[in-house]
Image (cartoon, rainbow, N blue to C red; front, side, top):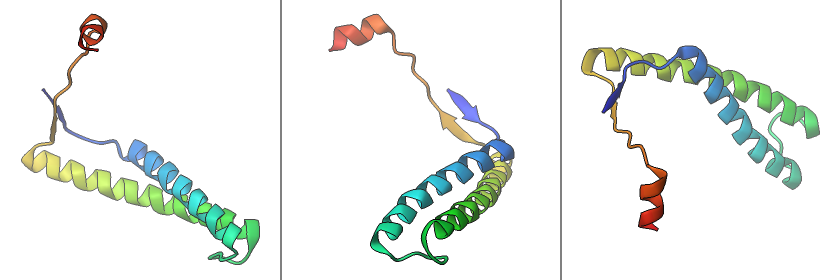
Length: 94
């Protein structure tokens, strides 16, 4: 069993930034297709939204990672149980 003690603020910010930008791209494309954009019209709206959501995602990622690190230091981190699957055992099961 392994314990996740800390989460890097930098990597968490990078991941959250990417995920929120990708989600905005999907919903932004849907809003462009339907004609209901948030920040003006067309591609300008999409560009502004992607940048804003990247910034918001980075900030949220850092806040969440920081909160996790504080809680994990005080009460312990997530306990992770990894199991290595052997190819031969996997073939026998199926």
